[in-house]
Image 1 (cartoon, protein in one colour):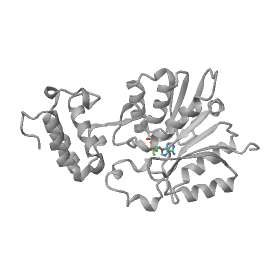
Image 2: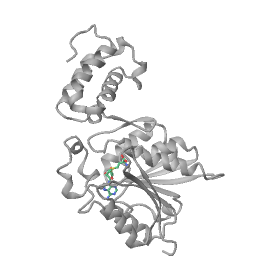
Image 3: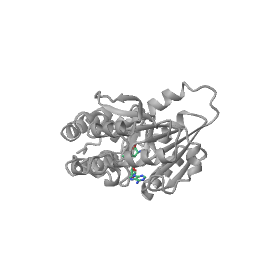
Image 4: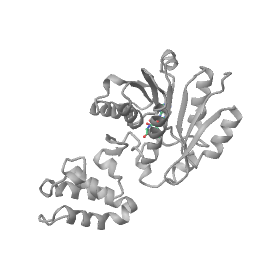
Length: 289
Ligand SMILES: C[S@@+](CC[C@H](N)C(=O)[O-])C[C@H]1O[C@@H](n2cnc3c(N)ncnc32)[C@H](O)[C@@H]1O
């Protein structure tokens, strides 16, 4: 632990790295910087001065981290895209993998010229990291956020307030589309969705850190594709005309692609993540639906 008051920032980082290497693996460097900047109430490690570092607070965080609790769940914060989001026991901590959804949507939107207003839906929003990051980048956008968990919606609301996006957002407590007004859906240009997708039989063998996220944010039913099926079936029924951007995962892709083929659904494109694994699909629904 850090019991020498004379340690400077670099020495503290070195000691933290020694402790974190076995627990955090290749995240150790990043986590040590986050602990230091969090303790100094600064967003960036680079801006922290030695005198601002709270060593007692770092010791407290380290104690929890050594027990295996994810850093984001200890400090209730996680960096995503360009911001630091509030997260807690009731939300999935935002993952770097999901940033590809933001990146692609922004990329596609930059090609749409003269669009006055852009309405979209962040379905299964959790912290709201996807929707808020997009609103933040697109001036004329408006996002509806849906989650079944009231507590997750509370976290999303905190983030909306933190980033001052109240005028560009509306929250809906709903089991998928159950309490979501059909006339709002008619004005939605795109839906972005990172649903729970871990097959139930794989859920309990997830690593301990992932199990700190709520089960409702992870368990995607027997094959892991229950949510995709329910969402797509509903949207076909209501003749949704927009595009859908889904996060996907190698664990479900075979079943997912089989389902899409059976339904005659067109994959506009797929994108791979940092590990070259399929991570995103953009789809449109059959024209004659
Ligand atoms: C994988 S997390 C995604 C959170 C966030 N969008 C992200 O990318 O970090 C899935 C979210 O879906 C929500 N959820 C689970 N079942 C739902 C349902 N039937 N209707 C709406 N939301 C649901 C969970 O509460 C959780 O917040």
